Length: 345
DNA sequence: GTTCTCACA
DNA sequence: TGTGAGAA
Image 1: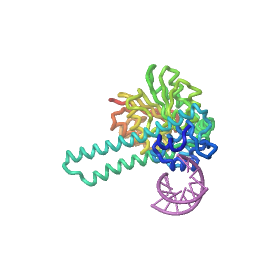
Image 2: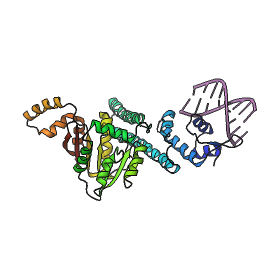
Image 3: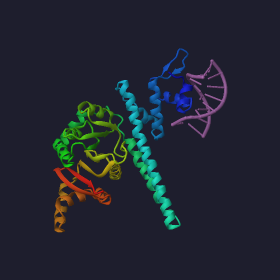
Image 4: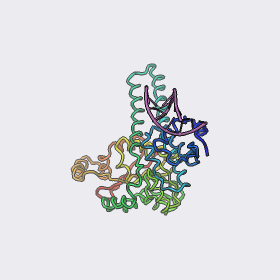
């Protein structure tokens, strides 16, 4: 139990700021002494630390309020939630720093090899860094903190309507990834664990990432052996070279193309050498257009199935090629397909 | 010491 | 999104 001055000294922020946060509803649980002095309990301290972390990550007060909203959790899980949130945001910050360090590295290299650094290069590299920051920034805006808006049941219902082959798609994904017992896999956008659960059944150690605390709660309930973390695909909260394989179903649709490429870079980072990736989603957009294309392609002697999807996702395919992945495409249903990518090194 | 309010950037 | 100053 702390008074405001001690707390401000411990956390390194002004008493004024603490009052400011409380005033804006970020610290709803602070108690008062008889003399009206604020008295901060353990929960408040953890919460405030989280607020500071979220602020440093560039999140607005309003968004923080939403992020900290899920009060439905028992006290024991609430602290865990705060810490997970902090880990996830630190991962995005860490990636940004890493990216900027790499950019600087490139500039130094350019300067060394070319004696002079063309102004265009400076702009180019700076823009690149700025752009990456914005991508991650935009994603933060998209964090679905209003988690109770849609329940999982509703979500599955929508999915089932849209994709009668949802279940089959998951089964196929679990088959294609060809996991062997003892391997460690990651499911990005794990939801309630429908896909990861199938893999766990075959003796694989699974981890999962999802934005939604509510989803992870249900996943934990259904599959207690799956380790889960709050996070997103653009800043995967795991270290480098950590997984034998990564699976992700019905998640890429939520990303624009640039975000998809960034997600691939992140997946590449957390995969071990010779790691595997299986992405399942709506990979085919317009059947009629594709039929025309197929005639065209077969005239050129290209392999049907591969070229088919290659046309749909040229940027992704190009990324795979540039980063030493071989790919194989499968059609599960007219609108749903999956790509298996295996790293050659 | 701490609270609150008004003003200011 | 915070901060300073002054009164209580």
